[in-house]
Length: 135
Image (tube, rainbow, N blue to C red; front, side):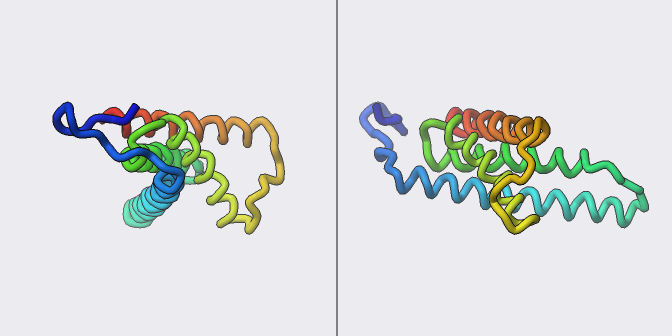
């Protein structure tokens, strides 16, 4: 069933594989932009304020916030299956960050911590995706 837009007789265009993939790519790029802005903001506050932030928890908050934002933007473009699109954005964002930092897309240690981060990435992106489709 097509999603209705405007009045009752107008229908949204059918989703294709191309729009599905394009929405995921757009979501990952939006996630990267938010993560970079968050890292710069935290670094500037640390530099100007002279705070000694040694825990990575603050950067992790911006990482999850960026996954949710990317899932939201991807679902807005996809207009359907927000939980799936957002969840894929969350997982693929974690793999993209791993590729950028280690040079490999393969996760070297698949321990409980890594599985937990992947699960939280999926859940955070899925929540953003559900919000993106519904609002």
